[in-house]
Length: 300
Image (cartoon, helix red, strand yellow):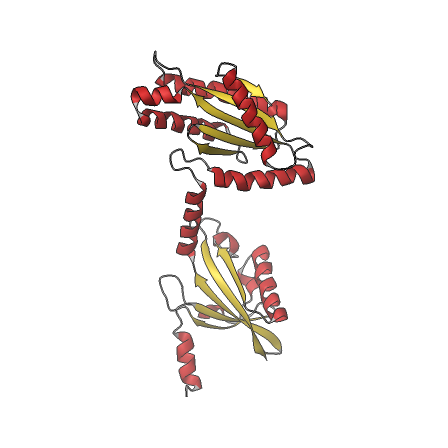
């Protein structure tokens, strides 16, 4: 049977740090953290309080999780980040990316100095978090243009449609595609067509605001979500956008084809019953722009 001294050695050998924390946020004991790739010696924390070391907003979050573990008796598992900006007394300058941890917090069935305590095990998951973010980006991104794909459009359209129905925040949609892309591919090859699609994507990145969402739906079809944008504002944007695209694409034109963009514009209305009603109206307007001779804008 393991005695107290041996158990202490086992705890000290843990690769991840394990903290005994009181309800008030006092570091009662620190064990482990022997994986020196990720952790420094935490022995100096003993006797300190979270509020002494961590800035108020983040410290309040730690104390809330300690309280939750004590009050429920359940194992609490949370992912969280820490950076220089969270630590009191350190300059804001530091690593570009925060360090990410998975915290596992469990109440203990004893008190220390008449205070309830928890065991908080912190595992550095920065590499895992970075990989998860990258995988999400890949699943949401069109590989050719770097714009978002249909999957991302579905998520964002639903969220902004809810803002429209709940708070009456306007939402406009611009649907567009490239005119005469097929003759370009037939004449100069698909590499030239891909270049045209990437140039249009560059115009999107240049002209869209931070909250706007540009998506490639497939082929030469694109959709732009313009949150907090009324119909007349969306039409003005479409005018500027068409001129910029045509200027960029004219460099690829020759006698057999003339690249341009056709655009349909629509805005959410009270009669809409689902998020894709506005997209369908924008698509219909785009179809009308094609029928009208291409290289034009139709408002739906």
